Length: 139
Image (tube, rainbow, N blue to C red; front, side, top):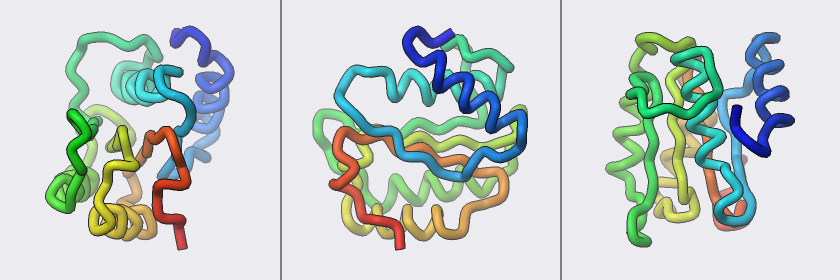
């Protein structure tokens, strides 16, 4: 179990069981509170039916993050789009986690909004940021 996230695990488990999970979520808050760990746990649940984070490879999850403050440009978002439009192999969903979402360039944010507006039926997108105001608002 993800320590400190029991309420979120219960809420997301219920959404999954009821079939009412959305196609996109924004995780925001202070640094080092477990936003990315929770997203990894969700990917583990989809692929391995456990919330325990392991070293097992994840086939139907893509994790995109900024490294050393580099921006995440349109090419990275093209890879996300390509990934999401492929059918899942072992999971009911293809999960794209975009950590440091505030590092998306304006062009990449626009492209991501387009994907969020018209997602593939099996797509789940999680944006992780410290400041939700740094992202374009959905239309």
